[in-house]
Length: 173
Image (tube, rainbow, N blue to C red; front, side):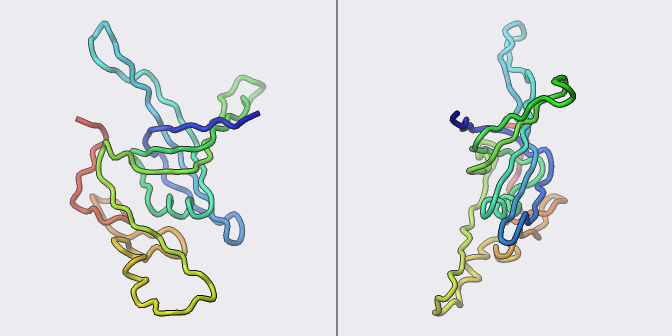
């Protein structure tokens, strides 16, 4: 059977949980809520119909970058493989829906985002590395190495990004 590839738009409803599953094998997970909006003909406007919840899983470099970039409540676009695990409680409990992420990004229809490329050092290569801190740490606290970076305060919460003055609405106008 072929795996189902999906793209889901939603908001992070839990903080990212980051851990090392083994040496050099980081994983991250968080819950994503995608609300379905339908047109109500009787009222003549769009209304929220229901919300789907997904557990998003990321591995390796994507896990490290997700942990450094995603905060609670942020609008996201996640592409990956959909996995629905069976019903619990003798077939009566809710199914668990996992999304094994291949790509995660901010939904820019709700705000702005700043991208900072993370460079990886290659063992055995010499040369002048005097500017690697500027490249790697451009706009980030912690320089983007060794795990998730955090540190810049914005509106009472901690973020690894430098968009301190950018408003971050939860819904479009």
